[in-house]
Every structure is written in C-alpha cells, then in structure tokens.
Image (cartoon, rainbow, N blue to C red):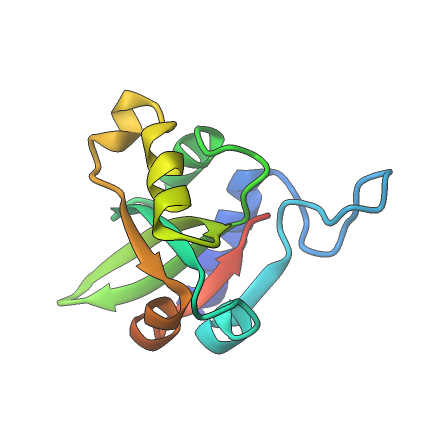
Length: 136
C-alpha cells in the first residue's frame, strides 16, 4: 500500500496523469509505474543514461526534473536501503558515454553538485531491481 501511495504522490507532483496524451498525440510526461525490466528491458543495453541524483524526499523530485532537458525521458526509481526510502532520478537515452557526459555538462550548477554519473542501460537493468515511474 505504501508503494502505491508513493507512486501516486510522485505522479501528483508532476501534475500529469499516466494515460493522457498531448494534443499532438505525443505521450504525456507520466507513462506509468513499471518494473525495472519493463522500464529498461526495451532500451538498447549498449546505450547510456545519467543518474542525475538520489533523494530521500519525494517532494524534491519535481524541482530537479524541471532542470532536465525536456527532450530526454526521465525515470524515478525508488527502493528502501537500510530503512531509508531513496528516489533515484535518471534521464536520457544516449548512444555513447560522450553524449551522456555532454548532457551532464549542460545541467545547471546546482544539479551538477549532486554529482550525476553515466551508467549503461545494461547496468541499470541489472542493478536497479526496483519499482520505476517513467515520468516522460
């Protein structure tokens, strides 16, 4: 039940509904809750994404996502570690590590202070056995 409420809160924070579409038929920001396999299984395992940051507070997610280039997909993974709930924000689908590093360089200074890092989708799929919300 707690996880369902957490997901509802994250979706509510983003101000969108999982199944809606924009007037030009592109997907809305929230595309729903899924497993790691569902979130990353279709992604090219040789491509890369950026873990922008990990947060303990759901309420802080919205502010950080605003700073990410809207053309990039964004995922929020959540899991408990040593009794603490963590929310990891990852963004982008990059063909190379270089492209991902350039995306990090374009982030605002305040976001870069969280020390974002590049990770392959193969690693994400393997390491992030969590619940995932694809935000856009």
